[in-house]
Image (cartoon, rainbow, N blue to C red):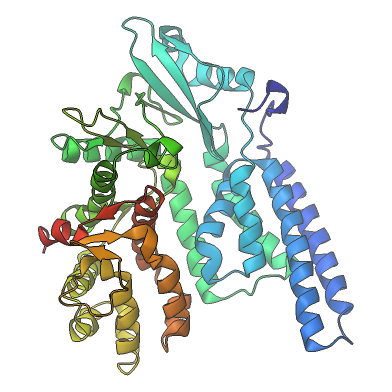
Length: 456
């Protein structure tokens, strides 16, 4: 954690302050961008492209550094754009925006304490709170605490003051910034995704929704010993504070995970993917942020106490309509059968698929068949690479599945349809990519076919 001297003493929440900061940065970046473009007038096409990429990277890095100074919702907007912007933003901009994840400076304790006093009043005296945050993000930071009366260990997710009220103005600032710099083409797809990010932002700062969702998932998983969901402590919850039990665990990418016996890693891998499958087949809603920071593993002893996945964050939940869920289920079923005709048939009943020419669907179906190859078997899938399916267990690390799917999609006749997919499918694919990555990182070898068969 950063030293106290590195922390922010207060947030720059004034609309005028934030507007001036971004306007100044945007105009400067736009002027530099225009100047750099003018210098390439007499260059060769190859030289122009090289200089253009270099100039865009420099201006994007500059803008992102200015955004990072503001904290709050505008940083979260940038982080979301980095996550989903690959479909409508230049690569140089998404790369720069990705660095915002490393710029989360904590708000100093005196400011946090003042905010807590305003939110909790006399209840604050019930708690002993660690001054150093457990974690820091763009919209909130998390502090560990103990209830004095019974020693209950809890965490307080403390939303920064003013960030919820600043979302709409920050969204406008961010959009105007991209327009002023003239580095991003203003398209219909861009506007649609921007509106989606706005909705996600408002949901993410609504702690009442997050508390209700946490309880809902806790109830669903209460009898499954493979998972832990924190308990919401209503007594210390407000519109800007979410209180829940403190749950111990180690990060997914901790070196200790790879020291576990193979079978224990396999079981954790299957459990991580089963959540995504149940979200589609049973619950109709999905936690769409597969960030590793949203999960921990509470290690057992390899005998009577089994390893458990701790599910920490339910702020990015999306509900899906029945039409979309039916299509998603049919796609998984076609992958299980590894049947091209079945996969083509599954791509109906949803506007995105219905708008695709029938002649292109088989090529797109081949990409989906590759993406779902872990659900297939050596008996129905002769295209499985040698050595990645042993005794019905799929070797995620050896498969390099994600890079193979991306390569196939880029070469597909349907590549332009993959470039800007509907946002709902992007959320689902992100969740599965997160589960796939989970299994790759812990080097799991899983029988996902057996697991998914239960739902088909």
